[in-house]
Length: 536
Image (cartoon, rainbow, N blue to C red):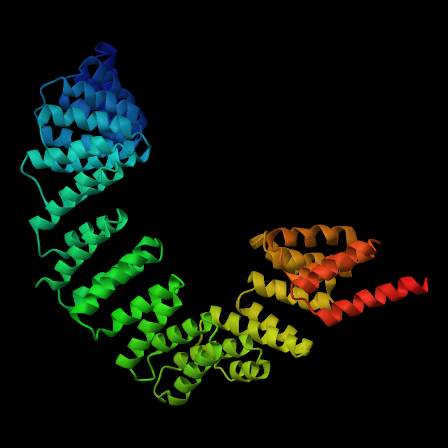
């Protein structure tokens, strides 16, 4: 078979000696080359054939296809534009090539050329839904919203209107800050299919973004009261707003407003109380968060509702009512059913251990966290727990166990910047492993170069290595980011003393006392220095 194809090629080449520009022979030779996958040779012959007869549809189509396959978009576009000036018999093939080439032009970021191609086709052959959508997408990519709107209006002019068209029209007007027209479009979409929650939600989203809260409340109330919504739909819409609030704070207001309207219709809807409570907590409106968490707890008193207990206890803790938070968690743990998921108990114990630590109840914190089944917890919770243990043991002066727990935390997350810093600082305080400590804190600083605590740790390690000038640089950098940290000021005083600036050291130490540093300890340092000066 291959030999016959090669023979055909030889025959066509021979024929070309007598008629070198004959398009029929050139086209036949090109097809022979294509049959043995010699596309470049085929392209050369097709180019010659097209030059001889640019009106030949079959030759032009074959050449365009090869250009597209080879990503030669400019050449393909040129041939298509040549065809536009001729009478085309196979409009379907031309349509497919125009569409394929426009997508390829888009991939090469040549949307302008693609738009010229699409516009020319539509102008010559009339309305086409797929090509118009493609044209719309390209205009949006180029942020040409006026032209995008014109493309959508062609759908409406051709009686092809739909909710989706009006929604896209609303989004385009919104991008132009034409909120009046945007609202009209969103309303039209919702009117076309009043039972379609997607279109009603699009209108609500517009009211959120434009902060038209009166209209948001009115439309939300109408939607929640309509027969189109049941409990599942109502909660789904609330969840949508809550999800959006994770990346856009304006949706926090929408979540609260929508949730409140839902509760007017169904005052006992537990999940609405819970979501509103969570949202108030994110906004640091802890009084309001407490109200909704407390109501949720009344509605669902079963002690295994971890989300409510967790939310309420964290809210109380944020309000510095840590004893109340401890009581909520301990009461829940005591009443927790045996069949509860083990991670619920472990998470509650984790938070209780943290609360004990925050209340300086270090022994209780250690006992609680060490009783936890770490296997059922997520990585980040285990990191937090072992980090808290490290801090608690440090407070109690058990530095070996502090070090051990920091290392356990790092076994779950070797790149955790805070734990790296804490272990480095522990070693610096014990004046051990200083080289390794410096490596750890530098690793932490790679992640958070402006972290005041990390900068101070590095300065303190350098101090312990007797590199006082370098130490001063990093400790002063730390104070640039946190100018009210008593410990860092004390470190600066110690550095200044080592650099021979006693008066400046005493001045800084006195400032340390004013910032809440250990007065007795600082005064002992100052008095010892003064006594030393007197004996001299």
